[in-house]
Image 1 (cartoon, rainbow, N blue to C red):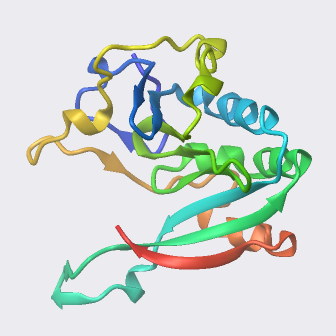
Image 2: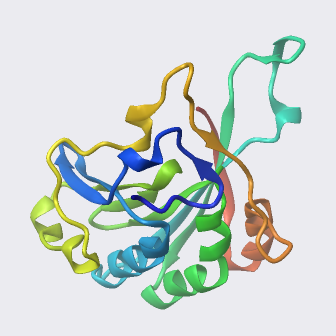
Length: 198
């Protein structure tokens, strides 16, 4: 059974397991919460180029527009970046913030490459996506973490219905939340790039 991030609950966790499959834009995988950090570190160290860090947080509800009381027009997320990271800086970001991000159920985060444009994103419910035009580079990548290729990978999203939705919540770790991360990395050049509609 897949070990979910602390802030995520799926209605049928017994149906979920680790695995990966190739898709048109790259690779998608279910990764145990305990392995997310090592998968990110692996991605970082195999790229000999400058890397950017990306963090997506749900926007403050005070900034959302209600179309009637309690009903929002749409939801948005704030997208933060730290550009031009060396391998050492990217790994230090993980040392300082990995537990906060992995425990939390609301944020999406990852790293991308300025030159090759490869990107890894950790989404809700442990869905890990690698976007690349060079899939062969990742042959054996997940096997190094004892994650096997699956036929017809089932993610938590595939199990949700109107009657059985997933649940994702904010989780504080050591008195901090993911909303503290922009302040934590202010001196590292983190910036709010845009606000996107979910």
